[in-house]
Image (cartoon, rainbow, N blue to C red; front, top):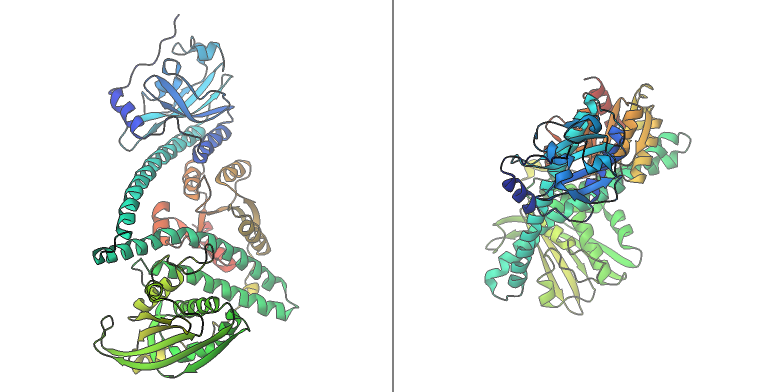
Length: 574
């Protein structure tokens, strides 16, 4: 008997054209696809696993485990049979007794295939591009859960392929846009001034989510560490106070993340009335520490009753940004004067008529040339050396001032110094009673170490690829009474679940390679009903929730033991 290749699916030319259009054939290895085959091999206990794409004359392996070749002729491809029924997993338990494959060179010779299971990779347009498949050299089968897992991996692979196409198209568009922007940036015509500014402002929103994720991971490690100190330091009151202060600092740092987004996104910050002069007065010690003892910091604060509506944390960050820039310009020595006064404006080109608090921060540094001073509020423009400034600091200050119905302005003279002025619109005195007079956040009435311990029976699988975050959170949860096992990847998490099913899985969303989103989908397939809590340091929570689904349970980093405990109790009780 002679081996017969698989029949062609209907309109195979269209299918091949769709595969070619995706530009994935003959591309380098990618970790996300390697994770798929690693997971398939582990779930099905198979020595060979492939992401196989069926071309016109061949099948090519985007990812493979257990084979030394990257392609075979299509005539011998088991996957060419699998794509004929896109909705089903093709399972061949013993190739030696299946007339479709018994005479195949891949059965009679290396790799001596005796078992095959392949789930078709189907695009949103319904084109079956290939399969996620597992192969063994002995006759065997797989159970229903393993079949479902293969189908889940095939769906994820289709999503990865379509994501690659989206990224490729986006990169092409970005290259074209950059060419147009470079052309516009090189043109002195005032017609392009707004365009240049708009493009740089829009870029802020694209870079800050990644910054926020990394920064929040650092905050989470600090938060868990400080909380452990506080919970264990019953006989060290000074350490407890330091730990409490550290936790407040972490919370404040998390608030600062959101400020980077306000410049380009129309998101309302936590607006509230504050009295500018008393609030600045409460910041004296902090600001003095920030700029160092070699800088003389002078205050001339008037208008004690003037109230403005703004975000308190953004206000503090704006002031800090300005004085740190002044300190750096003076090479860490000189004089900085902070002053407030009430001014009446009328006929201003930018600001509406009315009463404003003018907050000025002046230094006696080297000053700037007019052409430099006119650009300091532009995003990404910096006068500092490479690697010492992002160009976002004063742009953030301008964004804050505009949110407060005001503006930021600068006066600078070479050899004399620089003054940055914030004009913030005041609100009626009737709102003064709601103004924030706090010098600093007050401690919670109930310390975290007095919270009840968790039931010992609750087993938690914690997944986070940041080692410091993972270790500190594991220790914190163990101290809270939970049984915790920590792993660094989605792949390790699934292996852990196979060996010992936890009561709850807590996973970071932005895991490298095999994402938390993917992990959640696979868990839903293989362990329906297993409670899953996502945690994230990404600032854009709405977009994150959209990727996880409307019923996803999510915590934002930095998180506390009390937040985690309450959420665990809620999901376990479902």
